[in-house]
Length: 385
Ligand SMILES: NC(=O)c1ccc[n+]([C@@H]2O[C@H](COP(=O)([O-])OP(=O)(O)OC[C@H]3O[C@@H](n4cnc5c(N)ncnc54)[C@H](OP(=O)(O)O)[C@@H]3O)[C@@H](O)[C@H]2O)c1
Ligand SMILES: [Zn+2]
Image (cartoon, rainbow, N blue to C red; front, side, top):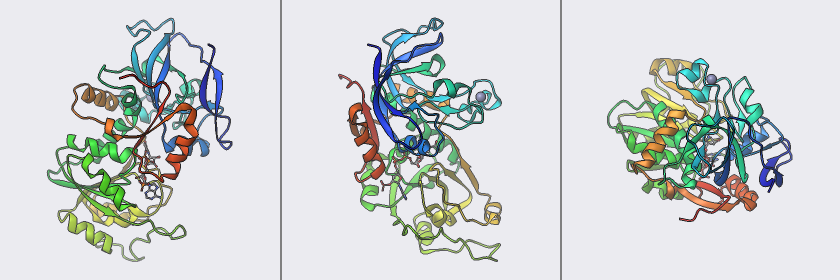
C-alpha cells in the first residue's frame, strides 16, 4: 500500500477534504506512526481559516498509534510496533526559551497539523503535515512512548490535558483555601482543567462561569475540588464590549456590577485567579473586578474582544495577566507519569467518537456545539481492549 486516507486542506478557505495521499517517506531521523486515535479541536479549523497553517497540508495535531517504520539514524531503542504518541509542538531545542524549558514559546514553535506561531519556520516547513490520517511522519525527538496502561485515545488527547496543566501552573495559586474562576469550563480544556485541579492543593473552590446552566451542572462531578456554577448568559451579538469603569474613574475600586457582587458573595476572600477559555465576547471584562489583589488572569481562549480595563487597576491591584501557547515537554511528561501511576483518569472525558471517514460530521459537531461535548476522538483504527 502506498497511499493513505487523510484529512487535507488545499488552502485556507476551501475547507477540508478527505482524500487519498501518498504515505510520507522518512528522513533518517524520522518515525512513521500508524495512527490509531487522533484528536480534533476547534482550534485546527480556526487557525487554518486565519491563514496560520502552511497549505496544502494534512491537518490534526493530536495522535497516538504504533511505530510503523524508523529512519536509518533512529537507534535509541525505539522499535517497530512500539506504542507511541506524537508531541506535535515543534521547537528548535537550542534557543533561550527552549533551554529554559519553555519550548512551546520557541521562536521556531509550531504545531504539526495545526499552525505556525514563532517567527522562524524551519521545522514546520518540513513537518507541517498532521495526524488526521492513517500515517504521520514525526521527527524522533517529538515521539513519546505510551505506557502500557495508557490507551491510544488518551495518548491522543494528552496534548490538551498537558496544556490544562500548564494553565494551572501559570495561575500560581499560592494562597491556601483559594477560590478560582474557570470560564467556558464545559469543553475540552475546561473539563481537563477540572480533572487536574486536585493536584493544586491551594485551590479550595472553583466557580464555573459559562453560558449554559445545565451544562455547568453536568460537569461538577468531574472535579474533586468543590465547584459552584455561575451562568452568565451571552449578550446579544451586536452588543458592545463591557465599558468598564466610567472615564475619569482613574483610581479607587472598580464599580461593583451585580455579577461582581454575586461573585464576591461566593468568594468573600476574593478570587485568586481567573482561568479564561472563552473564545469570544466580553465575559472576562464583566467578571474581572471580582479578582483579588495580586490575582492572576490566565487567558487561553484566543478571544479577539478587547479587554477594557484601566491600567491603573492592574497597577494598584498588582494583577498579573498572562497568556500561553500549549504546554512544555515537561508538562506532557508529567501527565504521562501521572497516568502511568494511575493518579487520575481522563477516559470519562471522551464524549464523542467518529471514524476518520466521518471527520466532517465531527467538525460540524465541534463547531455547532449543539451537543454537550468534552473530548472528541477520531478513531482511525479502533483499539481492541
Ligand atoms: N492557548 C492555547 O494553547 C489553547 C489551547 C487549547 C485551546 N485553546 C482555546 O481555548 C478555547 C477553549 O478550547 P476548548 O478546546 O475547550 O474548546 P471546546 O471544547 O470547543 O469548548 C468550547 C467552550 O467554550 C464555550 N463557548 C464557546 N463559544 C462561547 C461564547 N461565544 N461565549 C461563551 N462561551 C463560549 C463552550 O460552552 P458550551 O458548552 O456552552 O458550548 C465551551 O465551554 C478555544 O478558543 C481554543 O481555541 C487555546
Ligand atoms: Zn527554541
